[in-house]
Each structure stands twice: as structure tokens, then as C-alpha cells.
Image: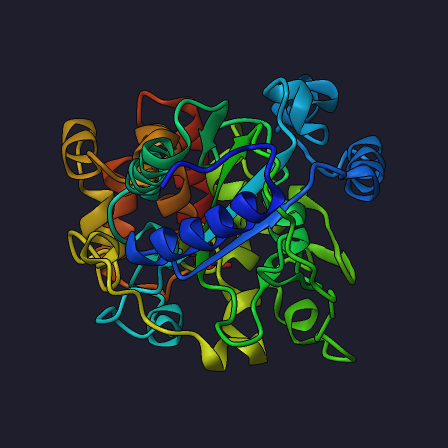
Length: 358
């Protein structure tokens, strides 16, 4: 059947068909929104003016392209938003790993293969299926790959609400999921949703944040956030925050781990999201002993690889400084105490100082 763009009934049928295809392709939810992000734009402007983005200059570099989809991709009038669950089914308990200071904690989303390629490939398949019934149309696929306000768009499309920790929450599925979008010029019907915020009086995420980065409900100071510090931040980690980072070496999940709505989350059936190289249960010393070429080889196809070896070692050094003192940890740190990288060396010397008798 060929669908006509100027026929509302055809567009409704097409929207229903796209939703069926999205679920068949492994997405857990699908929604359609318009491009009006005026409220989100003002919040973004205020957030940037406060400097809460830290080193993330790209957050303001693109001007209003982030909040005005038709500036990013001309003639866009609709956004197709999808979600894909990622909690790895057979991974070691997050709380157990966090409690063992000899182990390194990696955010659950990064334990497996990089989600960007997988989701882009699925979204492209969805677009290709759309072409078979609509013919050529204007579109562009995004998976955290351009200035896109994915959470406000997903909220508008009915995929959930933005919680006090600033992550999207879905009432029946929690928050352990990725988001992706297709910007399109198709006049598809937007789905009418009554947007309810179900956080209520709960403050669990705010209270659980190790660095108090959630400075107010729905307001995050990225400069304090462990995910930012271990992934985006380029230089030295502020000394006053290092001891609060514990053994978190890539990202932080605490605000989601304590969220009551994640009682309803489902484990992902995507094998690519299963933990690789025992990253869900591996000692800091073993990771610290990786040479640069080992890091590059083992992190091939992982989201972790993009931070580079130097920041990876910086993060592990801090975690070793926070670990329970042992001769093995001190020895591992001393091995790198004269590292050629000043960034790594600085954090190693700090960590050694944490294990020296006062």
C-alpha cells in the first residue's frame, strides 16, 4: 500500500505501521512529537548561563540547533522517538560492585558494546521500511550524535517524564534505557499524551548523589557529576571531589539505582549489551595494569574507548586512592608514580598519599 502525505488517514495508518515495525526491530517504545521545544530551550539557556555544563562547550556551540529541530535538519516537522532498554541481564550486582573498593564500577550502560551503532542501524532499518511504503522522504537518524534535546523530545512523544535527576523515567519500565530519534518532514499525527510527573515528594536521587550534583529537583550541576568527571572532563579531577567518587571509574548510576521506578525495569534481551571483559566484576589493579595498546584493543567497540587511555588511568588512580589500603594497591600505584603523563602522575601521587600514614 502506498501512503499519501496529504491524507491524514494515511498518515495515521503509517504511524501505526511504524510503531509496529519499531517494536519488531527491538525497540521497547515509540512515540511521535512536534518540534516545539520552547520551554526546554529556555531551561537550556538558563542552565548554560549558570555554567553548569563545565567543559562541555559543544552544549552551546551549536546555538539554537539543539532546541529547534528544523534548524538542525531543515523542513523537519515531526520527531520519531524510540527507547531501547539496556540493563544487562546477567551482570554482577551493581550494589555489590560499589561496595567492594577493590573493584572498578562501570556504569551499566557501558558494560557491553557501544549502543550508538546498534541503535543507528536499527533506526536506519526503520527508515528503510518507511521508504517502502511512502517512497523517498526527508529524514535524518540521530543517536546521541548531534545537538538533539532527546529527553524533552521523548517526554513530548509520551515515552516518560524527566525526573528530578534529569533522566527520563517510564512508569512501567524505569529509566535504564537509551533514546534515539528520526527527524522527518512527514506530517505524521502527534500522539496526544497527558504528561504526568510521578516523582512526587521522593528525594531519593538527590540524597543518594555522592557529590550532591543534583543541586535542586530537576537541576544538575554537571561539574559535580561523577559521570561528567570521569567521561567528559578533560583535566585534573578537583581534589575535593576525588574521595567522593569511590570506585566509580566510568560513569555513575547511583541516582538511578535508588529510583523506586526502577523496580519495574526489565533486563535487556540484546546480547550486545551484556558485560564484556568482566567489566561488571573486575579488580582495579587488573585494569590499572593494562598498557595503552591493551586498552585500545579491549575497548574496541565500547563507548568507553572514546575517553582515551589517559583519562581511563586517571579515573582508576582516583579509585585506587579510595580503596582499602593493601600492599598490592600501593605497589600498583608506585609502578605508575613516575608516569610520562602528567595527568596520570598527578592522580597517582594523590592516591599514594591517601595510603600513607598521616
